[in-house]
Length: 140
Image: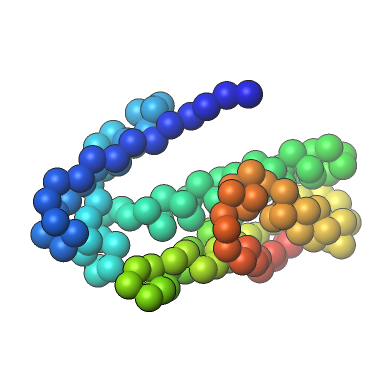
């Protein structure tokens, strides 16, 4: 068992404030986030984007492990996780995570697609999300 951490700061009100996010590893170090970065088009990051990146990375690693374990080689996986945030009463809820993945590997296409479905359901971030997790997989 191990624990990894991310941290955030916030100063000000919701719409006029701003904050930073960092990771334990230092890969993100005081990266700016805020209301207009989340709900508008201002450059920067937001929680949904970070969850999407974590989900795409987790899925890709899980699938790579499953493909390797099945003896499939020459693996190249490119994944995006689209996180949907919807209005829910007075607040918001993440309602969906949709994986879009392109998989290139030596092996049977049907077996690769089956393993992709298993990775979608089994990766730890998919299990973490209390939302519908869907996927479009393209095997080249």
